[in-house]
Length: 403
Figure 1: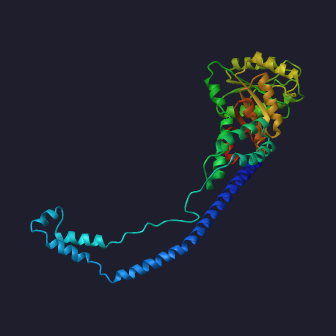
Figure 2 (figure 1 turned 90 degrees about the vertical axis):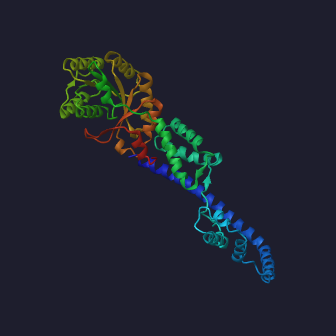
Figure 3 (figure 1 turned 135 degrees about the horizontal axis):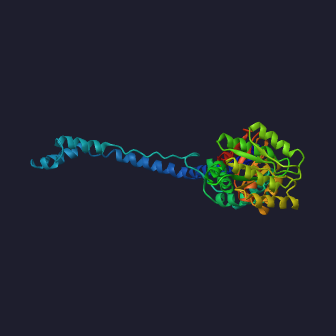
């Protein structure tokens, strides 16, 4: 899942990191070489100085240095008898103090070790604006290639530039810093999803009504059955409304799903008013104390004005608590445009993306979430009814390798 985008983002961040490491290493090597050149210049001077010091040392050898022990002893003899008691305050004896002074005087001061060399300091680097512009083009291309809409990629790049350009970064942490920054930006773009089960349980007056939108082939009808099964596992009863009265075999398809999961399906004849089907399903739920109504709708192309008008009517008559768009994650920009249209015309509350298990790119989730400013609630990850999982943006970022 999302393998393509994950690998390309990894390669991109590695490329920047290696380039900056190489740049710093070259600078440090040059610094060391310069240091060596400077030392070579100073060498003759040092040699001359050593010879002078040696000569002076020979001359001083003839003069006997005073013995510190003898000097201290002579001084001690001049101290009156009453003095030791004052001198020895807090000590055992004058001799002990004398020995301590002698030892202290004979001690040689330790030289502080100085560390030099290639690894003697922590190197910091900066990505300049000019460098970022070079890398920016590559990042933009890889995002667009992986189903990230242009406006979304533009926002990501703009934010990344603000957060990493001309900032001090540790040489060995350039790659991880950029990855974490990208992860934070994506985390901010994606809206935190709410839990459907909590919303259903919070509603005092039953039933809770959910209206589903999406074009044919997106997996909308199967997704409705999966959510009904998901609610059943959470001990929430539901009824399905076969509101797609336009597509051939759509009613039979929903009835088949209902039989398999043990959930009732309310339907009318083909060509019937979808709003009427939804209304009947809500009435059935009220009568039978069923908590939730899931309404399927027609999935003709989202650009058809008649379809949008039909959806608007269902919305008015059924007054849903939630309006959810179902789109294929593998269709990229198409799914983004569909979600944008439904959101602007009818208004959405959440999104379900199907076929996420075969989505190598992963950009659709980013795009749909950004353009609608609505949360992704579920990901469809297979054909079985259990293959649906609540969306977790932290797990999504982890799968992109940006944790």
